[in-house]
Image (tube, rainbow, N blue to C red; front, side, top):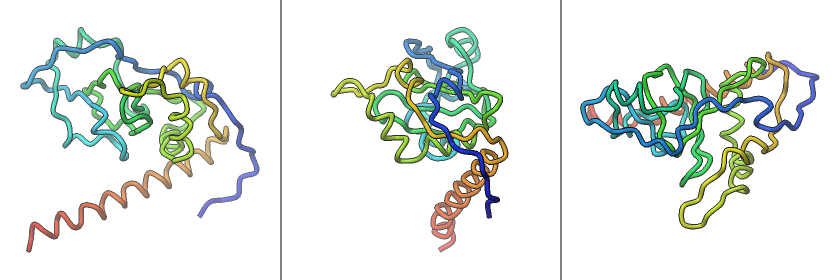
Length: 189
């Protein structure tokens, strides 16, 4: 399944392999029920790409263009920083979407593969690393300045990253298909 790699994995700070791409904290854009830009919130994170069926808020073109600090791109890793800490999704091609202020998006640096980083962030061990730096009891949150200093085990071998990332992307896809099978079979009974 996987060829043998001899490169060692290293402990690296998040800031060394990903750059902060989007941080709209403190920016609540005006909403519009007839808007065409989905506002991705924490409830839609946690499985592969964002779950657009859970999105209930939208921005119009004016709000999208004038009320955000930055924009998400395909391949960004969406990471919840308030409430349900550490939920992640890999941004798909819906680049016309925006993220709520309780989500930060990280973009992989050129020598790292996005779906590998998504798979890495999704592990229980790495979720616990984020939970260790949580502040506040009523509304738990993480400061991005602390998160970028958390160490993660990564490989610099781009081929190994690609193979691991592809494997887990396929696995996520298969799980999603199997979860939908009972839904589809109920429609025809």
